[in-house]
Image (tube, rainbow, N blue to C red; front, side, top):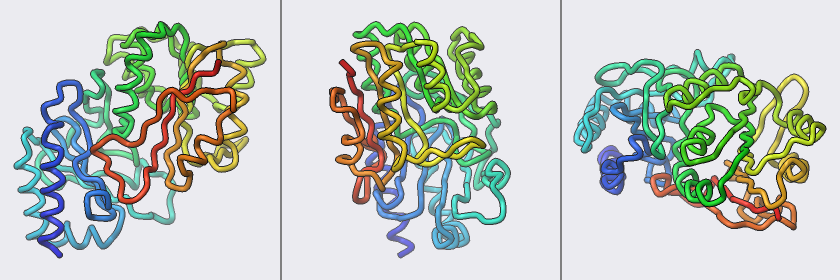
Length: 324
């Protein structure tokens, strides 16, 4: 079993060798859990750093508490066609007793040096800060790389003036769109911490910051406000979490997704475009498609990129729709 694990990791690395020569991306997935043969293990490259995440105690005990296996894994990583400065390890098993994930999801150093908390990487030709140390997410959604790449042509051909990025998080979509010719992007998120990170990503790409383009608040409430003010957008990004809760409401993809899209339609310009995304195994492609208004026309559909091979089904469903 031990040799099989290391061999599976090496084979996954070999399949991704071509990604190291891509000049517009220096971050991507090297090993994707069961899709590459080991359930509960992911390995990602971020520039000169490797982030390993384990989702089961079995994987932790097998790979990282066994010195021989741990050393073999490190050697395999250092043989990659890239100069690696550090290897980080993060526990992603179910943790009880605390919900402050920024404190309890802290990466540990397995080899080399610790990166700075805001470490610059390149994805889809833009720069972004990745936090490889704290919390559950780095702020870079590697599985959206192919979606953003496909949108580049759309942005340039459609000459989009106004974009709304709901659940914007660190605003990678907005930064990419603005660098591809979109004139203006409004970002809405219910976290002041990530809005600050979004502004940092703007600065990193020499984009002008207008505080009115960064809205702290609930996305559902903001849709109603835009509608009341008769404010409309050429292009909308709707990529909500599978489940979220704030003081006023909860949002669930299963319960609320389909009901929200007709409301978003009311703030879209005639013949506008909307990118809708669902990140969940529990929603099939057929269900995802059925959530959308019948008058919308699907013009692009994507799953995870090739460095995220699925074990059985795809979890990412991303579609670009035209509303008129």
